[in-house]
Length: 272
Image 1: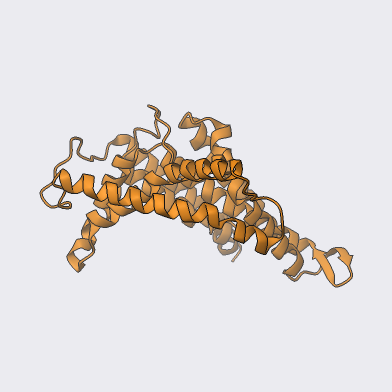
Image 2: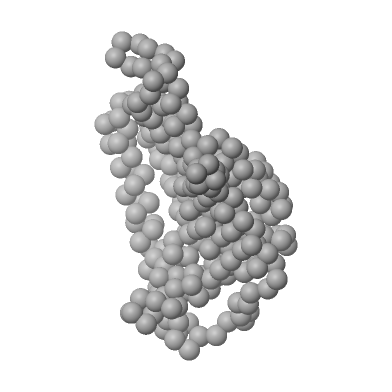
């Protein structure tokens, strides 16, 4: 299960998506997330799914590796499907058992909400797979720089977000190592009821928190020993610069958003 969590991992490459400016990828991801909420039909979700798969193919990422990022949220997806399927009102009843009933409208709504969750995580995973942590930090800091006028610490926020993403794989490896060590000592993390399983997690959580605080302290000491004093006066080896491929990417994502908006509201306006 822990090996299925791919958030924060970077897959090196030289594809079209890899060469995009990090600001372009961050903004395109946000626009795509907004576009997801424009979808209200299966045609719209089919377009969004096709676009996400096309981006994955263009980025030359292993499809199975990207799809693997969906596995940790499948429980949430199934719960979302079930909640909408059994609670959403509708007129066409498909199945009834005691006090539970499934309607066609509820089933369709559950499928759409589940697809929305999966597409959101799938497209967001492409951002971290194709952008190194250092470049991602520069992109976030550049986007937050206008807010420095109102006191927002752009560099510090960008650094904290990137360090958090960077240490997710490290903490997962540490969790797996501690779990194997405790299992070898007789700990059982899989049997018992929910309360018993929660108690069994204590031998895992305590050393994990200690290890995390130790790593944080070591990182702080290392940054201080290298005279790190924040973003003031710092320069970059590679300055961020928008290129033609970035404008092409923006044009594509805006065209997708406009198409989804037309499918949702344009047809009704044309009918008027």
